Image (cartoon, rainbow, N blue to C red; front, side, top):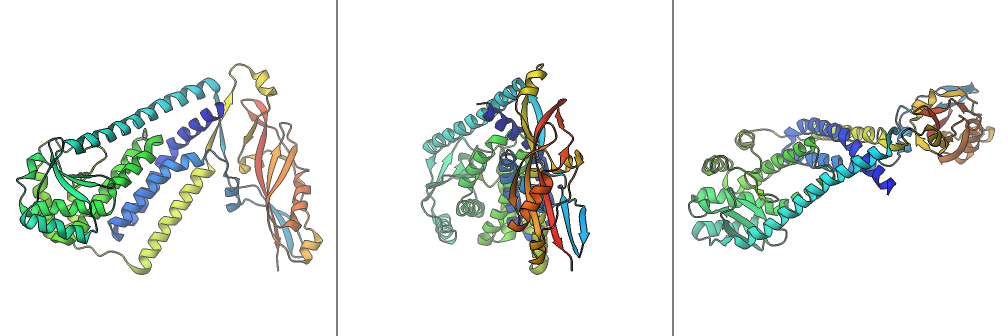
Length: 446
């Protein structure tokens, strides 16, 4: 049970700072890809939301292998064109956060209570959709509207869809996973001009083809552990805005961009002032209140980037995303319980924490130089041996495990590191056992 509390608190603590970090990276990537089209921007924000919800969970675990990507080394020897260097990491690692057991339990309970509230709200909103469908009054389309409906069914490859009217909504919306339903406000159902009705139908069919209702439910479920965070709400808002622009482009292909834009303005004017509230879980043409940008996107002639320039921007955004994720994981925080007011018992209790290799490099007192094995040198074997090292509370190396590296070089690394001594690492003034990583680099120079 205590481990569960620590995991919950570790997720919460890491989400506090990782969500803003990922939002900043997503904003930069979305800005860079704006000229590539609304679909690219939408994909960036969906990826950002996914990482914001999942990455804090990944930080619960140790990612020692990240240290192999950055090195701060020194030459241990340099003879006959060979050298061995020891890499102590580039600042990556897990930052220990000491907290009292009572505080851990309190924060965990509060966090679970907030998450339970959002989960209950999600379920309650789902039940209101069933009532909304039951109370809706079927609408029969005739004339050109019926013909346009049939065209949309074929164009968007969407079947088993119906249209109805409801007094509980204030703008057109779409709902349903398998049996899709287009709902119109009662005030619009019988008075919409033909062109405006076609705009609504085309836009909602675009949502149906993309399965946006189902995707929106998945986004909400995924967001439940981090729904408390305001920047997660802002990410969800960016997803809605970019999604509406994607559907605008798809729908405008049916009616014409300029006519679609004019119709969108007329539809907006029909809405009751102050009633532009979203119906929970549903997807609608007015989900995102960014009319100016949507209209500019429809009416302005913009040239989307193509070819090598597009690939270069996408590659730069991917590199930014990988760097951000690596940083978030490498700097993830673990939670350790500390007994309040009982230092004697705490010092006796066996504790082990993971500390950055760069931090532990500053605690080294004595260091033996790894020797390049003659047989490996003769066979021209080189590479990096990654060791996971446990340092006792007395500063002596207690245990060494090989993570990776050439077999011929492993024993030499182990023999050298076993002789190293460290200044004891202190946690709240008490020495503790530490797990860290050391990289021994063997290199042949021509």
